[in-house]
Length: 124
Image (cartoon, one colour):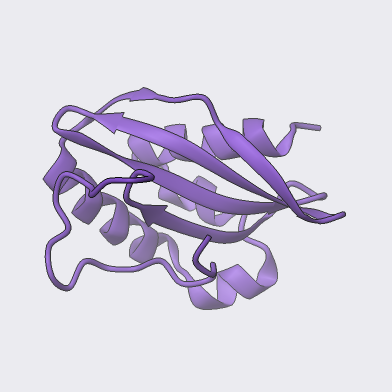
């Protein structure tokens, strides 16, 4: 079984590659009720429209929220900026929350009005 960090990096790599249905297959029931593959795709495309294509992924960091839930942050480095993919991964390897956030201490390359927000995760 993969670690929470490995799952999170895989999710970001799949998003970069346009594999949103595979990501949606990892949604736990509460997230599945709040987020579709299409909504995730729209949010990802809105984020990368401002920051450019993904060039690299940074080292993931994680923190335990509960014994069965880990929050993982994966820095996403793009051509014109960066953002952080933040997700909560449970002990079964399912996503319980997912959001795209500006980098710590800074702004994303672009944050246009009306940018789709990913439901299912509280602010870190």
